[in-house]
Amino acid sequence: MNAILSINLVFYLIGIIVMLVAYMALRDHSNPRRYTTALFWGLFGVSFLFGDLMLATLGKSVTYKVTGTGVIIMAVLAGMNWLGKGSHADTDRQQRLAALSRLGNRIFLPALTIPVITVILTVVVKDWQLGAWYLLDQKNLTLTSLCLACLVALAVACRYTRSTPLQAVRESRRLIDAIGWALILPQMLAMLGGVFVVAKTGQSIQAIVNLFINPESRFTLIVMYCGGMALFTMIMGNAFAAFPVMTAGIALPFLINQHHAHPAALVAIGMFSGYCGTLMTPMAANFNIVPAALLELEDKYLVIKTQIPTALLVLVCNILLIHYFVFP
Image (cartoon, rainbow, N blue to C red; front, side, top):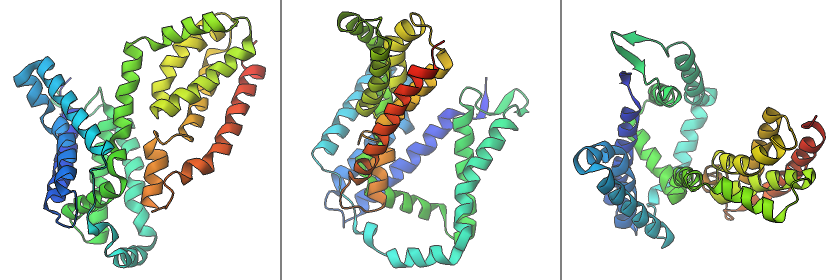
């Protein structure tokens, strides 16, 4: 189905922004690692901006090899700590705070605009057409709606702050410098989850459980499922990536088919157990490392250390909920 605002346009927009960030990093002489920083974000932006072109001209095989090589180079740059930041991250702090205080509660309007516009577009505008063309990409409705909502929020923010979209890119670069390589970790981990699914890791876990765990021990299986969801989430940083692996390996063959657990309740609490792992891992960078960077905490793992007791307590509660309420 043809769409005016397709997911490809969203990718192109992301690519343009990232390439602008790379260009700004290259021009920033206050950054002691400006060349490697620009290379890192340039490689990241290339996949968004030129991915379709490479597929059309080079074919899948060559494109995948080129992209994979770029990912390896990015991993080396990040692992060798060759990403730097300019002095802009610490300058004009008082001026920014003063400007924000003058806006008062209006500062929240752009942020509130994003979910409101996204919901309106997803619910009301989803079926709008101009001839044979849909307004929004029907296969990626939420993402395209979110992108359009962000553009509206940007316009609102520029209206209230009397600034320009280019300044928004500069501020994006300031945040990117503060966050660093952790910004792209969710995308990398999502791909790792896909690799685990293709490799049939769930079936391997099922075979291991059959070897070492008594399938008749329901409580042990529950502990394995909830603990496994938390552990795999800690490894992959994403409960959605851990979910198909642990559900296919333990929940479906043992707890549902053998012990007749209520499927909806079981997997819902299982997913919640995965979120317990999210609270305890630096791999969930957008939840745990990014806030520490934005708050300029001296200990970048302080958020995780604070959340661990709560996460463990909730995990125990999830195990008990499944044991007492999910089975007939």
